[in-house]
Image 1: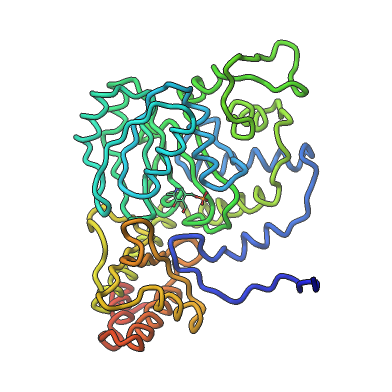
Image 2 (image 1 turned 30 degrees about the vertical axis):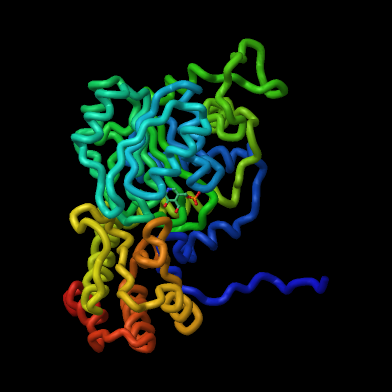
Length: 408
Ligand SMILES: Cc1ncc(COP(=O)(O)O)c(C=O)c1O
């Protein structure tokens, strides 16, 4: 085998549902040299990261930290640490990622119940209430924004509902955190997990997460420290959390002043996650969310300006991804292929029942920018016309420009 050359990716504008183009500041932070895991610089950086993400999650939760994994691993860490085999969990499902929560909870050995809504809609709170009344779950596990459909589940009233049934509230905020309001404490959420690769503007591989005192109590009751790093008096239980790597009780100990030697820190990812949060908090969370609203609205107007239909219930959309119904007679993959090959722009397809029916176009993190929106719309117009689909000349860019008030 001849030696491959150094990595040299082509220039791309990632305008899909995530991952998106990483902010160059994050990449620069990630090129910083390593220090030892327990170097005072490192432990201070870990403490800084906890503080930064408390602001991003709008929480006072002590246990706000990074799980060294992609988002899916953090979902698994939350569920495997909260749920014991036989525990009852209720999962509202409105898209692919609801199904993922079901799958993970089943593998935890939980008794899983679902309440389903058609894709392109969200689950009505009355349906969730009725299901809770019926199954009395220990955990209500929700996807906040289901990237597969672009729908965002309202959280109004969920805390009251959970209080009524003495239930923990978990949220997967991978797709929404940073770009849409998610005030963890105000909404009474007990556990929330995210990822860097969407609105937070970084690469995947680190998962910011936060846990309320109530969730921590449940997790700590299951604490069992592995042999070799266990101190006298440390608990060992017969039924420990069913994953070692994703055992949040040990991960909490690693992030605490105790600094339990659970795993080797993904230092480079921590540098990246730290910079993602710094970028957000430098402009301020409300302004950062407003940026997503503005550029998301411009993309939506642009798509409609091209005469295309927006997928799903308008009132329930997340700000940062728009679903576009692929017009009849158009080969969605051919359009995506030409966007990538000819313009260097990636847009997304979707999954399951939406595969081949819907494109997903993101405006988030570093790519929540006027030039990224306008370039994508201009390219899409050109590709559609060349594929034989009639589009109003300049319709997409003009409509987006109107949203920007001509100031773009
Ligand atoms: C809502 C949601 N949850 C979970 C995931 C899984 O994330 P990862 O691929 O980083 O493990 C994704 C990924 O797109 C997502 O959009």
